Amino acid sequence: MTEAPNVPPGVDTSIPTPARIYDYMLRGRHYFEGDQMAAEQILSAVPEIRDAAWSNRGFHQRAAKYIAEQGVSQFIDIGSGLPTVGNTHEVVQKVVPDVTVIYVDNDPMVELHSQDILIGEEKIAAIAGDLREPAALLAHPTVRELIDFSQPVGLLLTGVMMFVSDASRPHDLVRQYLDALVPGSYLSLSHLTDDQKPPARAEAFRAAFDTATEHLYFRSRPEVAAFFNGLDLVAPYEGAEPGLTYTGVWGAEDRELADTDGSRWLYCAVGRKP
Ligand SMILES: C[S@@+](CC[C@H](N)C(=O)[O-])C[C@H]1O[C@@H](n2cnc3c(N)ncnc32)[C@H](O)[C@@H]1O
Image 1 (tube, helix red, strand yellow):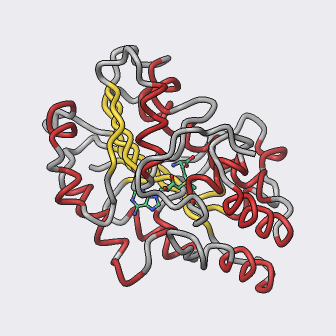
Image 2 (tube, protein in one colour):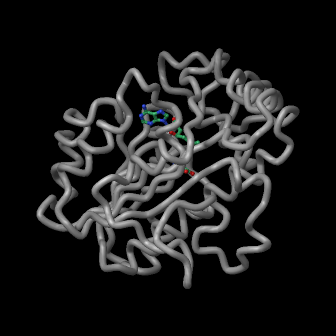
């Protein structure tokens, strides 16, 4: 069970949250009983879900590294999740030691626990923020202080847009963030899908979030591709056409090994703003 002693004021630990359910899947330490129950409900319907979570995390890291290798030295990681093995700044600092990273999440546990990994880091920050409020987020004093909007930014939206309903106009939200960024900026995004999945299993997966702080929305391949409208997609691996793929496969060393049932729960891509 959790060893997370610190709970921000006002947080009801009995209500599952996406960040803590994901932490349970990644075998972290920041979850409570309700999160474990929701996660176990998902695991019984989708036994390969831990593999799905790891394939998403692997994509997140490989894509961030790729973007840093293109010369991008500042990142906004929205829906960043609880600290885990290989946090974004640790991955990109290996490429660009002087990198700036802002972690944003609407789960107050994330801001609190992220402080532990930011000690001594001047250009890495974690703030509370809801991606459904792009104007407020982009005007946040920490964002304004640390991000130079005249230079390219790596916008990381991995495993988060699936918690945004159609009513909140998810594609318009992503567009608003991209509009604030200069050409040469990148978007990395991954998203759960139920394409080609047994409907009963997908429904049990989705329903595990009915009592959580955020609900879950699967999207189809064209719906995920539409997040990249106006961007130049990069090839997911050498020899491939630019486009979408599954999270395990993107940038994988061994694509055959990485193309698992778990990985096929998530589409992903990286696109460059022309
Ligand atoms: C599945 S985790 C993904 C973590 C990380 N991005 C990754 O790919 O490994 C989803 C995260 O998105 C956050 N989240 C969900 N809805 C959000 C919103 N509207 N604004 C900001 N963060 C949100 C959750 O709190 C959680 O930490």
